[in-house]
Length: 279
Length: 268
Image (cartoon, rainbow over the protein chains, first blue to last red):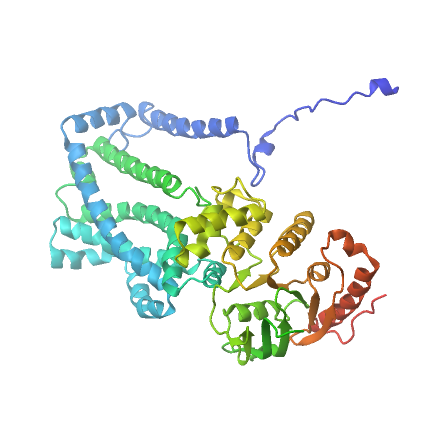
């Protein structure tokens, strides 16, 4: 073989097989990723269509996409859906916001000061293992079955978990960041205000997002037990009349709102904390 | 030596842990650092070198003995003793500028002064143009340069450096060592530099204290009488290599003790 024949081989693209896509932690081409993503969504819809239009499952148990969409349009048109969604949203935001306002400062204190931890931890560790649903009868007895009871369920459900999560965030502020602040001349109050608090922000943001997700669970539980409005009520009420399509509209709405909140929190995180490693 | 800038007198540090025997981290250690002198401290891992710096910084209290700065006893942390840590301790929510300004700002310096000081030290560590960058956008070497600028912006009397280049790759580390000496030539400060890298200790220091395995005591004080300003070429000189051989032998012996060996392998 003469030298002239030895040409630098052009970087030939190796043939991709399914095994290349399944290497642990290995990034895959964006196109492949999106294709799988779309395939997953379409597959779900296709399965739904096949099960309903194909007559595999009786319409009583699983409504077809067309029935569900038609039912959704009706519920939006007559205001039922918006009314119930609004009722649920106002309860969830109130209960969650109260828990945040009370829980975040307590969590930060608990994570930062051993003395506060010793003071609060026993109470919280006890209460957090009580499922909120177990407290609903008591709350109905104390507060009644109105909006206040549902707000209380969400508050109790999220508050204790939130305190613990935030405390964990505060406890994991790197010790060196606090030490270095002292050597830069910071007083104890300055360390808390100018180092500890900002250092907890990304973790607190994440905690807010996670607890908002849980709040939806508690809300629906509370609404299923006793309510005259709200998405949980709408679902239960539809079940009584065998309006399965309405149940599905309710579920889709809850899922959609949950997803919306999740995306909103992620967007806020990037906007408000551009410095955060997660942004 | 004239009256020492910084002196440690018979320092003992005992750590008490629950359900564990007391640990004597540092045992009756005394040392002096002259004004504007660079003193390095080397020793096997776990010998208490970092604890020593934390003591001077006021982050740890000695169980016995005292630390004097200009003849006054120090107990708590203070801005006159700045510290640079091995781990990346920049505040991620502040820009390069914000980090460097942190000290002057919390001490209530006027806005103008803060900005001027920040600009000066950012330039000194060669990061002009990166004022608005956040730490997550910087490399490890750049982050440590900001950390040094942040410590210097407070104009401390003593700069405590705890293996500040330990996490950097070899080339960046060499660059940082020369940069530090360059800054020191321009604005001399009293520096206490802890490292486990013997080359680094000898290259930077006018004197090197070698510590024993735990409990940390002084094993030897080695004078590094090499001319300044120094560049890294000096590390291949005969004098340098001769001193290095001596220190290396001591360290290997101490490291052997720390690992529980009776005798360390002889150094050729």
